[in-house]
Image (cartoon, rainbow, N blue to C red; front, side, top):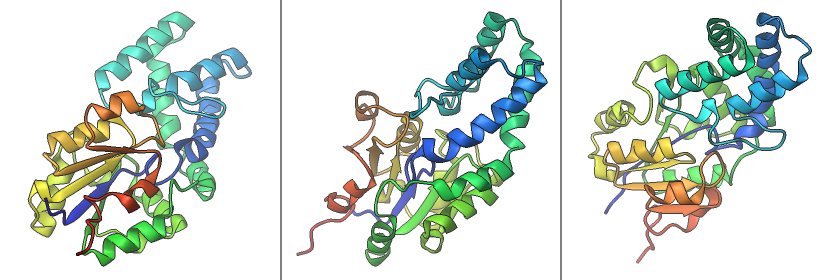
Length: 249
């Protein structure tokens, strides 16, 4: 195997998910409560955050924000609305508005991003080895660029796929295929690095040559190991990976 390209997930892979998104969703939940006429309802506030997958100091893998299946997301939301006696339509529309309308809250939160490893060193090593470096995220382009600038690694990325580029969501391989076409690579020449099962399924459906899972986000070692060739505690594990960085002879 000779890898020539690598595609990273963003949230939970390059930085700790909770450090950035928990404050954003807490702001959004206040808007949701207001829309539902339940401002000040602390019990519902906590339940809504748990539904999303946001705890006080951690994330919950079963939360809505970590699911790639839209039908399951809608089903969970419908069950929640019924249990709490609130309008499903209002819940859905207020959730959507809270997420897409909170760009300012996200900008305020991004400087708190905690990197999951020595990003500068890893990206520099990849560049020295001749890798084409890509990113595939469901976030918007504006906040993605801002995040990469804050982390100090924007210059290393040759290809960025975001919500605004209209590729189908992971695990669909459309963005992976676009990356391969752009740099004339075959799928087995590209590695995928992520923190969630959807990232690993993305790699598998794309027929990536190598998939690396990190225990820095929403995935656990048991579920990630089903798909990944290698699992590391954090991004620094790449530095000693013999496939990403083969020993020099």
